View 1: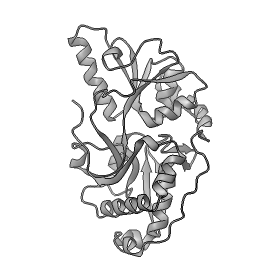
View 2: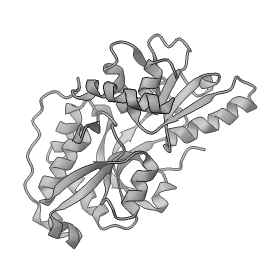
View 3: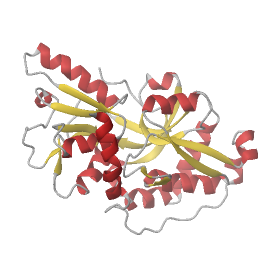
View 4: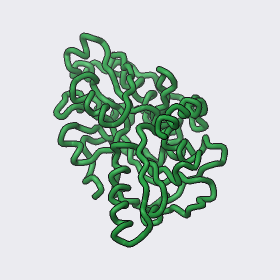
Length: 296
């Protein structure tokens, strides 16, 4: 079933080439910050480039069309590259596990994400957090299964991203449904966002449990077939920060932190976030390893 959905996702990707959020906005072009550039690892300065890895389309942050990456994260990394005087190239891998393994093996210098920051993940990686996120459900229009919380997910088929924090929360809910004597919850894990959302649109899943920002995007592109549910609830999470990922102790982490701070100070961060409809995910100041405990 998953292979069919992934193949169909290629067609679904056509609707992601443009975003209703991506209105024209004045994004200041950056000049090289010599002090920040001098703090880059020598190999990066010598090569004049670094590679950022992504986990496939995660709109409106990362929108992968063929070999082209657009979205808020692409705009921000472009600005960071200008500021650091290096070219930032993008590569796509399948799944969060492959992404983290590639970073920690040195194949990629970083992932800009945003990727959920939790204390357990900080054991092997450092996170440069630049957004705050919320986790909700995307359901069929009219919410026919009345899914609006974790408890109401019992007895339904819930799609999640494989290896993500939402998957862990839903798996815990499977056991809670059993303990409470409620109907069984079926978890469907997919490696990318388009396949997950397609499962709901094709009625193979009853809901997709994931980050609010990309789900808002997908709902806006679904021709009235989908809506959000569970907005404003904890849904198994407390404060959820997301950001860029580097190997533990990498000198690149503090450089990215200061580069993002500079983009916030000069207005580029706000311009890009507003361009992609992400005003509600902005934070006033980026931070290093702001994450809390992974939901139990």
